[in-house]
Length: 278
Ligand code: RET
Image (cartoon, rainbow, N blue to C red; front, side):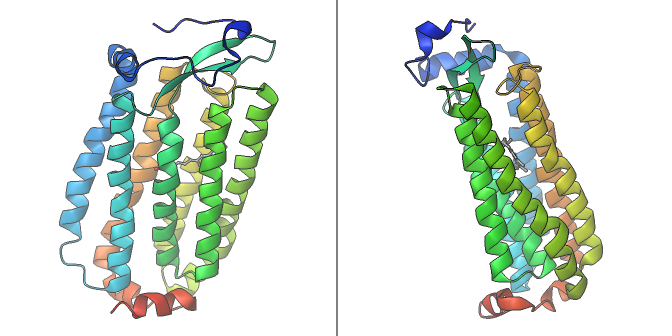
């Protein structure tokens, strides 16, 4: 097991040195933690097979693009969780405590890194469904990437507690921009595109579940440490089930049944972009 150390022993290094095999063993011997990873590997695998099957007869180019973006979500997820179980994308770092001192914490930094690829895919799929223009899609995607990378910085900062939380706030600021596009801009676009009903269902699911991530970061082992690493991991893993697989299934099921509606969306500059692919 990983021991707690004092500040003086560990402030010099970003990480406490563990080999990849040691981290792999650390994860593997914690049955509950590794179950929180393996459950997602299994679900992502099933989702990939199901979505490929569901998309077999999709011919409309915008619908195909939605399929590819959405299929990337479980593809990135299976890679992400494989990184976590193999000990490749976890580290033990010395996190500063509010009262002084510090403690070694197993950080699942691979999650934040891979979110920078999976969450833009979710937004691209939602934007295409809403009939967004390129400006709004670009805004949502870059703000979202900013959120994930500053979240990664928050998790990996060891120099000062204050800076960890400053990164967290920066990440939240990026998140607000994403929420603005999701809650204000795209619902209007979706109304014009005739996809308001499904868009609003998916928007509600997305906004509700996505809000859970910063909450669990704050409560979890990388934040206030009210939850243990295993509990934090389960929280993220369960949020992932809804935000990725259930979200993707609902979206793709609707797209398959409503290709004609998708085919008629031609708003903004993205209409031209996808039309030229025909
Ligand atoms: C962090 C911590 C810093 C503040 C904020 C966060 C938000 C994370 C979100 C993650 C969503 C992930 C999903 C993954 C699916 O593949 C980085 C936890 C705002 C919203 C949906």
